Image 1 (spheres, rainbow, N blue to C red):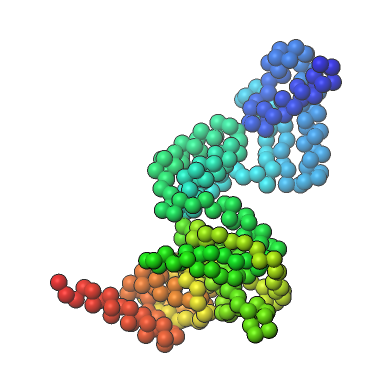
Image 2 (cartoon, rainbow, N blue to C red; image 1 turned 45 degrees about the vertical axis):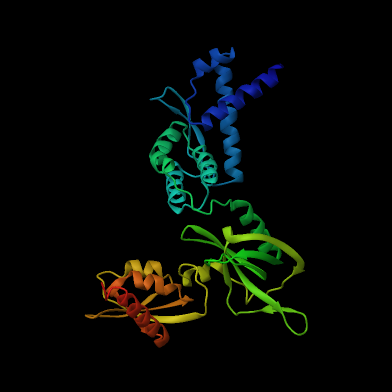
Length: 339
């Protein structure tokens, strides 16, 4: 090996170990590579120059090599802002485990990749130990379906505006299989599952595809048996484009339906949890009888959440939702009125 190649290999070896959080002692490195300490110092100076150039290209790269007297060697300080910190890796790992969004095989692969990003490497064991119990007792969902490939394929179809034909198993006792032609609009995760938001379309008398409803349908991705591109594209104006962020603020438990404005009376001590649950909610007034809160929501999924709040929440408007709540509560009470 030429002297230049030897130097390049040595410098890269030192750089990699610095990135891993290891300390570089000049005397030890000189003995390891059979060179004098000045050669190691030049390697470190080259790495410092490289990091300075990187910082000029990318201001978020805050890495630098400094001498640490306690470790008696040179160490890498700072990090690229684009890289996750150890605390972020721990937090995301906890969220992934709690979400139960992936199969056992998928979650293991994802967590291993996250843990591999810990710097220094000794923190990998710390983070791994902190999630070990939850990881061991992880319970995958009953469908045990791999969804990652579907997510990528459907995401590409959304981006390319491809009209799709899907086969979907409805959540009924008979597990009815239905076919739909849809305009895929967005991918959303909620309450353990990934969903495809899509407008169901059908042909009109002129043979053109039109929306069957003026709001999107919601398909659980693990229940989509098959999907294929029809070979046709759909067009959408900028003004009428689907915004999943705004939709997500107004949907509860992924129950589709018409957009409606509701008004509630909240009699609990603090409405913070309600405001967090309903991002569009705002407090109209506060009296000794409670808070009057207004929000926009899609569909009837909101009823499931309202029922979970017991007597702390009363539906005031619209009248139709108030009557439906009364009917549901009467039916629930009827189940407990006889022994």
